[in-house]
Length: 500
Image 1 (cartoon, rainbow, N blue to C red):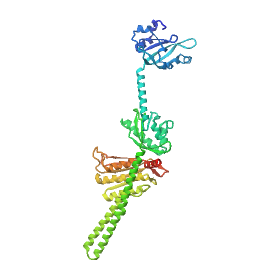
Image 2: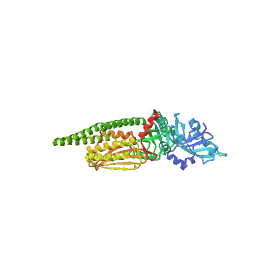
Image 3: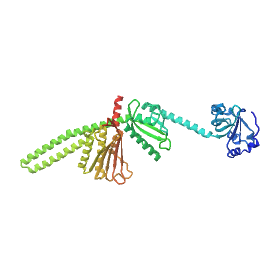
Image 4: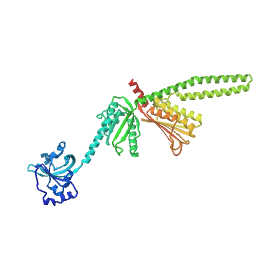
């Protein structure tokens, strides 16, 4: 190994060198011609040599032969003529062999301090920073990341990753298989919004709702509230999915892991179940109207005729009793027809929902003495898809029945709004409200939630401190041709037809 004299006295008195030694920085000096490096005591200790300062000043190490073969490229460019034409500063990360024979990661920062007559570097001076622990942690993190991605990629559930700049960085195989989009099709969230939600109004609702729930989850350090959406696939078909998200950082706009659970088939089954219930209600309603209703009508007419005959024959008392029975029969006819209408209302779809809600308000007032205020906004000539109309009617019907029976209220307001992306229904009473921290239960509440879910909507209940109870139903919609409001139920039925 080539030898060099010990550090000269004037070098030892150099204030910069003294400052470096005082800071315990590993200083090194590399001689290109001899391929040797001389370092201070901290340099040698970095490599596992427990030397005194005097021993360190006399010790030289070969250089390139101790650098890991895979890392030679990290700094050998400093020995080229191209580098000599630059300022001479360089920085490189590489592994170097220690006394134990193992390799350690170092961060070298230095510069060329001498060149030959042709401008080639002959001597470099710099500082070495031990970054081995950091690099090992990076390797562990990368290995963990590879394992995580392998698990996600093997999952049958669609997963996506996006970074804090809105770039989509990863789509698993299930995502591509379900929706047809590759990462080249949707490299950013902007492309995803436009491809998956092509209708501008619906896309605006989805994006606004997503951002609102994402920000709320970050502020509360809680979980993202899932949202149900209709996704347009690359082949033009549409699927119903529940979107979940988990932030991968503290920033509201940071990276997220997104899970899109395909529930199209589940919603098809729910829609079919509701359709079966609706048909059965229609059948019972028609049977009541055409069967029992007609029979009671006939009985009322017979009693009325008997009463008239009794009075003509002088049996006035009997005639009066028969007249009362005839009146009771007519009341029964009215009740049966009201029940039949409730079970099988006509014109649930189209613009008839507005008249049905008005009739429901009037019948509630007549039956229970409850004052009902009805407000409808934004409908105009919009024709409501049948299943949304039925859902709204049933939820309003159940809510008003609960208010009349349990709330001890005197007034109740029913308000419904239609927009380009959402239809809502709010039922609010001035009754005693729910007990503190009580959770709504019972068949009626479960029925409302099931009906709302089946059309892609949601129903919520709350009891404000001032009293009363508020039930809210909301459903994302799409307006087609400016007049037809299409629900998720329409999509699932179309998807069911396409799979047969």
